[in-house]
Image 1 (cartoon, rainbow, N blue to C red):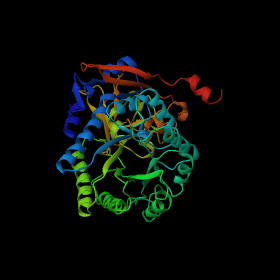
Image 2 (spheres, rainbow, N blue to C red; image 1 turned 45 degrees about the horizontal axis):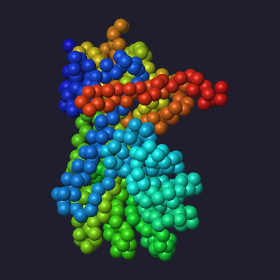
Image 3 (cartoon, rainbow, N blue to C red; image 1 turned 180 degrees about the vertical axis):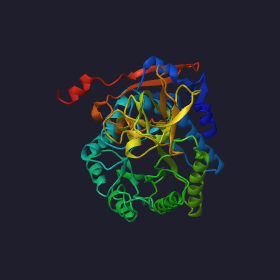
Image 4 (tube, one colour; image 1 turned 90 degrees about the vertical axis):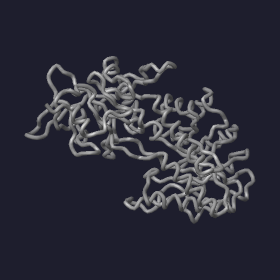
Length: 462
């Protein structure tokens, strides 16, 4: 008999640190998922909070190891990119681990205010304000600066943005400049739409920053969409960026920080082999080498990790409602949710996640496609990152089958319109937070229940 457990063990290096099998049931970070399902039902989103802490502490360790190894003479600062997940439980976990904040739009700033009111941050916390800024965003940033948030750093995205701050900020303040990096060769565009062109940076400094004693240039910001990856493209763009920092530092004594935007990748398949320590080491080594070559003091290094921070903490659990054989070879398992509304990256970006059965691992398996509940033909999931087909245990009447998608903690709620109107009015599932107490015992609580019809009808004006 070809059992599902045999397939997984033959295909992957299973079990892993995150995924283990006990009593024929899948455990995620030593959490019994069937126990969670039995208490809360499905569909269900969960966040395993200790994973957020682990990710932050690991990144700090990797960069500190690199700083020590290369005798680097400046500091490392970990910022959390709030756009990946704005939930309070995520920010609380990040801040408890010493993370600072990177914002990207207007309403991030009221969120910062709330965190300050609750004592989660201080006026010394770094708040790196990115994005193309409309007037209200600039107003809120200016108010933070005027209220004494001394490490709030607006990162200039164009040549005119600073004019607003010079008019409205009444205290000394610092700014950064985002460089418009070249896009990947396969991109539809040559240069990022965000940031200031390389050729305009010195002009911006000379004409608008240097003549004004209230403002100083502290940070040069670098971001590429592909994230931090070991490719010729990435190292070429980073080298170009470091050279611009070195050239600008000769003119700007206050410039002392380099923000390496773009995140580290997360595991979206079990064959993941990214070497975080190597990449941190290479970044530090390259910066130090170019600074030493040009007799330039080494800058402080900031990173802005979003998906890396929160992605691997998330999972979505579903029940299989029924199976449908639509022709001689296409067998569908229908889930009790929707990929379009609950895992929109699988639909919009063809993103693959780690997908595993939660129970019935000792049963035989078959090749299937997964269908969502909406009427949209695109509401399906039919391949994995490592192979074209997906396999799950065979279904029998009276024997429930549950599945899980893992490392889904970044972006899915916001892209899916959390709390709003879902496609075909499919309700958003309940959300459960999983933690551990001081003795290491697993605890869980309901953060939000299933979206109800009254809330949807009210939003729609009924």
